[in-house]
Image (cartoon, rainbow, N blue to C red; front, side):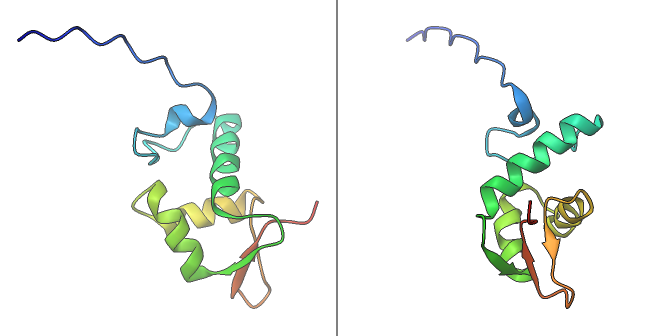
Length: 96
């Protein structure tokens, strides 16, 4: 039994090109614009406007993107995509 060759998959565009088939980050982009686009995509997938979550829940939501959710959380905070409360107990989207 011979199988038909599969057509090539179309190349993924935008920030999704940095994710593997399972949605995990393959490597953090080196170019700042690409990194910002990827972080923006991730934060849109893990947090809704007006929602505030604790660190444990944020880690749980970030875990599907890679093996180090703490580093990813740090990237998101440092880049301004997440805001941590002054007590450091919760995270939310910034007010714009």
